[in-house]
Length: 349
View 1 (cartoon, rainbow, N blue to C red):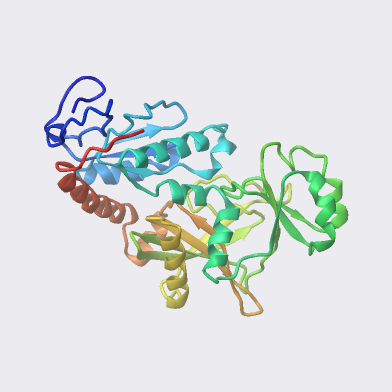
View 2 (cartoon, rainbow, N blue to C red; view 1 turned 180 degrees about the vertical axis):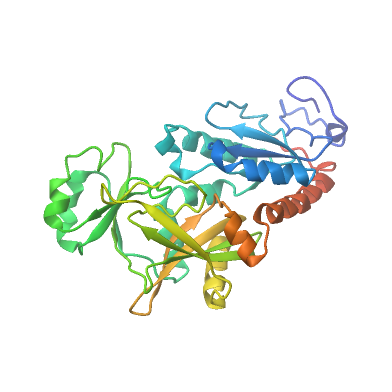
């Protein structure tokens, strides 16, 4: 069997030439097992790349802000780690999400292992998909209405319970979220393109109030619990745990901030629920957020795939988040390298 470029590999020679037309095969695995890190925001990558270097893992950054690939020969690394954020469009990188969706699907179609792959990224970039998955698992989520455009509000405004929040389905670091006090407030905003940005599916969602004003978050790597924290936002919807993360204020003129506290005695039933959510989402590395309410409910509000580990949280509970990620990648690299030598070439088309 002959490759598209006319060359033959030892793996190719294991397969008979059927004469049924041209065959296209995945690339042979690199001699040195390596990781391709797919990303969009440099600010979050330094600790990860440092950990990869310390662990002796060969790696390459793949910046989807300026990137192209061959649909039939996209695979260059042993495995891939997706780190593209749903908030890309807030940094002027509107095409990054669509490019990442296409790249992840292509890599998987050509036999690559992708950590936080196409299914989990679809979940990461759609609050509707997240909520449907969680609803299917029987966990509580906020009451939510999706609208295709502002004109649709008139048909459902009598079903809404105020106050509520208006948010884009794509989400990302509290992007474009607004608190809506009553129906008059909502109707007054219908024609504002900053409130209803073109091209966005928008959600009208119940406001959940926690018993202590905090949002709970747990992080996992490969199904294993890593750490838990409580986040207390002040005048912001942005719960991004990264140090120095810019936070847009809810009310102009007031300081927007968020404080983070390690939670070593997080309830194990909540951890079990969060683990099941990530398993169903096929999310290898990620976190889940919820609120415990005054009326005794546990309401899950978000699934996060671009985990950022705060140094203070790691020290407080005695873990090294990105080293744990590297240990997981090392195990997976070994598995992929072991089987790639005898991988059966796949015919595309």
